[in-house]
Length: 434
Ligand code: UDX
Image 1: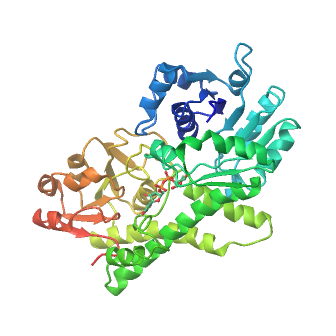
Image 2 (image 1 turned 30 degrees about the vertical axis):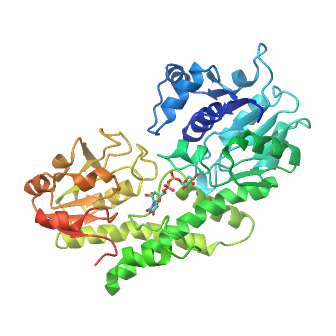
Image 3 (image 1 turned 180 degrees about the vertical axis):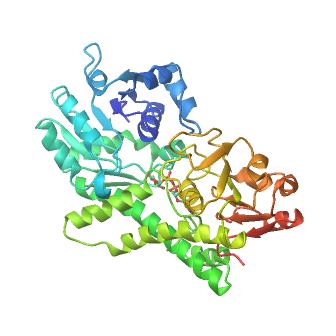
């Protein structure tokens, strides 16, 4: 493998992980962001996202002289004293815009900025999740015959992004110019992962296809859990029995308060929009979105039932606010969506989350954020587990029981050991569990 000179534009979860991991593979990487303060922090080796292994790679990469941070895309590619950049990754946000479609203004802004500066022969790689056709559109925006645009979607989970980058299930690279796709695939050759080389539109589609499939799988499991509740079956046994079928697999079969985060909600909505724009419907994905919204309502029904029929004026303690364990990310968190619904019914909410130790104005406003589980439990008519932090399993449940006004825990993640709670004389309500 040849070490390549690479620019990465955008230092969010995806960009920073991509830059630091590519540097760890031996490439020379310059990462750019428009946030000057963030670049200064990164230069000091400070990483402001919770991502295991990332800060170590950033520090190692800088120490080895293979990783640098600069302000702005222009600075990353126009460095007269350096050899030209061969590959430029676009890792900028593509948030959900009006009506659910992806907002591509950040991709467009970078394309406009670098258009006249890209070295001849440079390959521009889109790593952001973008609608099918964006690679072709980006090539149009760049209006350069001597550069190629490649789609190379990322499949990184927050909380294990470095691991996922360095141990990928597959690498997908798409470009209508095969040699450019091969050059990008070669960047990852050390990883030895199966590589799918295809056209740009198909590579763009893979990302949506994968994330929507995962969302569908979870909505299916959540719907099964509801049926298990009604029919007296146990969803844990049901999913275990399903999961041994290799065509299904055990992963992504845990019921919960609904799926969330920065990707699945955005990508499911975007694919439905993309289909609508093409004059097609995608009822299977639309139903998964609707099932997900309903799941949050069902969780509130469970809490209301557990406290005797009305939430008005009751103190409810929440364990977990982030969208999943192992992250500090509150974006599109199902926990906060459930909190908002509880609040509408008049509950007073106190919440504890190991990844979110203090209130985040404008985001956690429905909840009084406290610094430990005992405080969340104080005088609570019920405790609700919303995020699957493993440390919740070994909390001081006897101590918590002593703080609660009413000893009931609604465990929307089926995380806790019901026997441990029973010994603390707390009644446990799960999802789809007998
Ligand atoms: C996801 C994809 O997994 C990743 O490949 C893509 O690149 C980005 O989007 P992420 O958003 O980090 O990653 O979260 P993920 O671990 O996939 O979980 C998504 C949501 O599903 C979370 O709310 C999580 O709590 C929920 N989930 C996941 C379940 O409810 N049950 C499960 O069994 C798994």
